Amino acid sequence: MRHTAPLGSGLGRFTVALLLVGSCLSATAAERDTSFQDTMADWLTIFVLCFVPIVGVIIFWLVHVLPEKIAHHRHHPQRDAITTLCLLSLLFGGLLWPLAWLWAFTKPIGYRAAYGTDKHEDYYDEMAEKHRAGGLAREDLVHLREDLEAMEARGALPPRLRALKDELTRLHYEEAARLRAQAAATAQKGGA
Image (cartoon, rainbow, N blue to C red; front, top):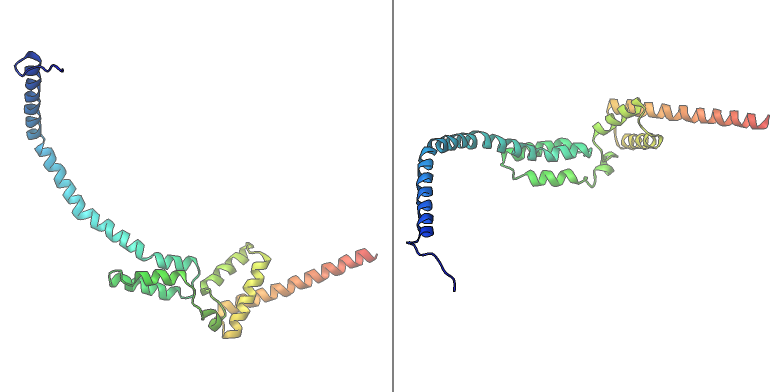
């Protein structure tokens, strides 16, 4: 059997006294800290009322421009329409956003057949910049020239893309002439 100290014993009275003193001290400490708690509650209220809505609007905006960013990164040919849909989605409370999201990840089926490309015009400007900087491989130049020729076959090219196509065609013929000259020089060295 377990022996417990009765409430009237020394250990029991000491325990009860400690509990009473502790509760009295905590009550007076709580009374003293109410001004601190009130101040903290006031600052928390100001934070929630002022900053949380601002952060919420910023996050809402960043999420709504994601389809536009994705379309730009993927050189989507209808990027401008996706941008417009994202802005309309902001006006309609986000109801159109899933459509913009899906549209950014899909390529239009008949766009290449109609226009000869499935890239936005800015893609060709970026490729021209890389070409002028010397950062474009020969195979990429050939594909770029073929894309521009296919676009020209479907319809008129904008002036800047026509100039790029003419430049790539000129480079292609210059490289072919240089390779023929190298082959002729190699043949003469081998025959001599």
